[in-house]
Image 1 (cartoon, rainbow over the protein chains, first blue to last red):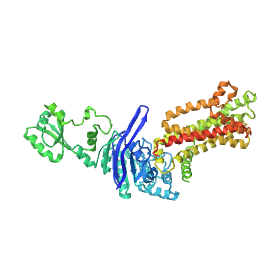
Image 2: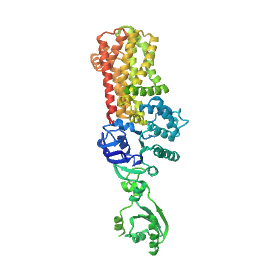
Image 3: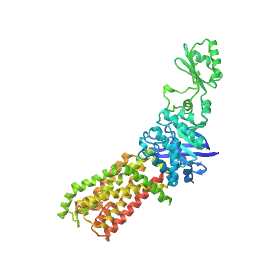
Image 4: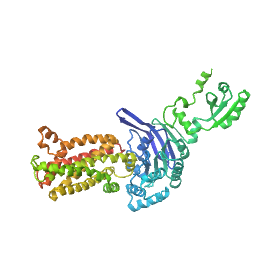
Length: 342
Length: 255
């Protein structure tokens, strides 16, 4: 059953330097109970899309419904059903006030959803329990650790037991332990409460670890969509790196034109191949090279990461979002390499 | 009744935060207190020689100006707090709840009115120690003006803050706004003692009318054209500023 549906959702901003298209046209469908990740570099349009879907920003084009309520026609209906956890900015929290206490924030949030005081108070106790915040109720939020504060931010988003929760970069800035702890909490939202989770991230491992489905967004457009494994398989295949004894050009020439090799690059001392099923292709490949009299120093087989997926889809590395430099050039097309080899 | 309830919730939170960190409330009182202590006696002796041309008690003339100054430096800087809240994600967090949009802004403005009124009472008390004499009803009318000034200035400050989301722009914007207002509203000296062009320029400042009306109130003259003018200007300014802030606040919203 569909819980979020967007068609052609777009947003332009007018700045002094002209019109900036932050989100070009996003189509997406999220089913009830799914954990869906929005993956893209900084500035790709993730936050803008989230802000539109949560009624914080009016879309310039397109339509969307959340829990069946239209974003423009019934924003209050949308707000009633969703929780939103803003991006955390530096040391500042994603929505909590540094000079309020944990409990004050939780109770206020419940009351802002028009719950009676007693009910808001009960709900706050429950959330403290669920998100491991017990013992911190009286602490001012500025004294919490990064992981604790992020759990509080999520608890605030859950104050009214929403059907959908939007998390904007939930684990940015956390240490590895706090991250995996946070991930456990996010998984539990669905397992225990059946909450639909829509999160944005620029961490591939986060998308990989949490999401049933990933939408890759770049320059305001969804450029790919699928389960993490699907995306990895579809785009890159496995990578075999052969370190050659001698001139890799010979190995490169010998392998050119062999079936099953999708892409091939070489550098000073090794040849890098992209193949469909690496573990099956490898034995035959080794036999072939041995017969051709090409000696190898080492062989390395790697499954692609979402990093590779992103690089392949956009021609850019995800980490910095900058155009690819010489050092990280994506695998060139085989045709070009043939020309060089010839 | 949702609006009233929502406003009460936001107001309660803002008051709690103000009480938790009272430093700013105290610091912004220091400047007018210093004016009262170090400048008030000079003003009083000049006033006594009749050079200024005001009627009645010197401090009855001086304190209304200080009260407006207190508002200009205190209430007008509340915009910094909304920029901080914006950065912390608090504004988004509130806006995504079902709470009335208007209440998010209005709750804050009501807090600012309370803060300025409390500061004003302290300043007026200090004024009495120095020799201010005015009827109680006049003082209360003066506080009414102060409340309207607080509404106007904090609405403007929140508006600029939300529009620019930059402390630097807000700071220079306020400087640009406050200095001419301070100089052209007759806060320290009546503009009538100066040349005509300056007095004419001063009549463009809404605060001039408000200060004149407050001085009338302190003299116990409640039914005068000056008073009517002052009330009209103060109410109109408060309404216009609140509406502008509301438009800015709702502008980005989906609705």
